[in-house]
Length: 278
Image (tube, rainbow, N blue to C red; front, top):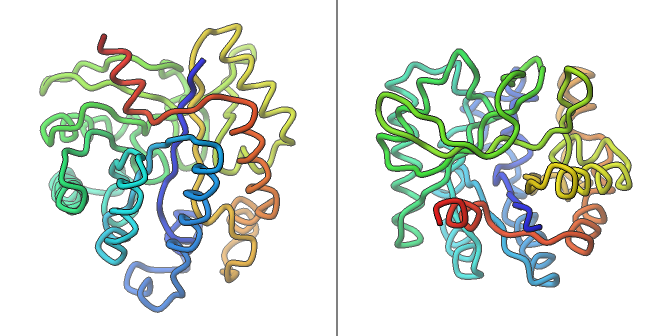
């Protein structure tokens, strides 16, 4: 089974967990560590001869164009993570469209080819913001990976389909790759990404991905962020919950990534899209 590996390229101070204490206007004042951390992930991926999808924030791409080119030149898929890491349901459609188009153009100009994939900040395409899919279709994206079929305080569509499917809208259709979950009774448990990847002991993550692959015969969508392999990053004083979500087990992520790459086969999401189209 080929699973999908995805990296959401943003810096440690740009996360939604700290948006109440770090405004966009303050971003330039923080030490940037995104290039260092992304380079580490690129080297690990090279070590295991694995390619991934990098969902890159437009704001980051503007300031680190050489990093975007490096990701592309090393054979990985470049996709969009929006421009300024604003949750979709907090934006007006016209602002979302403007920022989505801006980010797509920045990335396409840097790599010289079309960007087909999109992932919203904090997986924020919810029932209240499904209109965003129409804009993605209109802007030429062929797939989205923003819907999380879970209950969460910041995101989620609990009753959404759990695996890849086509969503039809008035403007056309788009393939959705939901973030991975396991079904327990009437609940979906998130697995294989971000804070969940750091929170659960690796044997549980390995068991969950194996279960998705073997029993449900579906690929798992694994995701992480460059800042998650950086236990030495500067600390931001947010709420206790925000600090727990962001900092728990940062010192274990690099080893977890290596274990995943050793135990499973991964490819970019774009390759799964091509397979589904055949």
